[in-house]
Length: 209
Ligand code: VGL
Ligand code: ZN
Image (cartoon, rainbow, N blue to C red; front, side):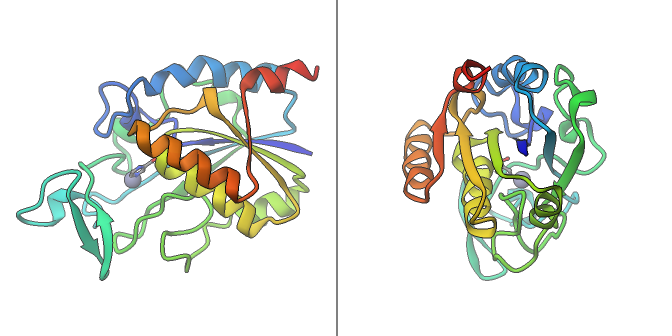
C-alpha cells in the first residue's frame, strides 16, 4: 500500500506567510496532481501547529531576532519568526490545496518546550506523534514524502520514516518540495540519500501508470 505524506503545506510557509519558503506555493498544483493521479491508497498531511508562546519563536527570547541561533530546553535551536500559531490563518493549509483529498492530518509542534520538525516525533526524539503507528496499522509499504521545507521538516520526516519504519520504502519527491536555503537543500538531499531515502520526481510517480 502506497502513502503520500504532505509536509506542512500551510500558508505560513508560502508567499505572504510568516515563515515563507521561497516559492513554496509552487508545490500546490504538483501535489494536487499527485493526489488526483498518483494512485495513492492513503494521503496524510502534517501541520506545524504551535501555541502562541512556542519556545522556537524569537519573540520568546528577549534580545534575539528571527534566524538567530538560541537555545530551547538547553539545546541549540534556530529561532524562527512566530509562525503557524494554532487556529490562525498562517496555520491553515494553503487555500489551493485539495484538502478533500487528504485522509489524515497529523499535527506537530504543540509542546512549547521542544520543536518538532518531523511529523513523526519531536526534535529530542522523545515524544512520538503517533504517525508511525498509524502508518504501520495502515500497512504502508511505500511512503512518498514532499512539501515544505525540504531542509527542515521534510528532511526530518524522511529521516524519521527510515528510522522508525525500517521496512518501508521511503521516497522524497524533489519537485514537489521547496526549501528555505539552497545550500541547506543540497545538504538535506545528501543526508536523505545517505539514510536510504530514494530521491524521485513527480514524473516518476506518473510514469509508472
Ligand atoms: C518548519 C521551521 C520551523 C518546516 C517548521 O515546516 O520546515 N521549519 N517550523
Ligand atoms: Zn515550526
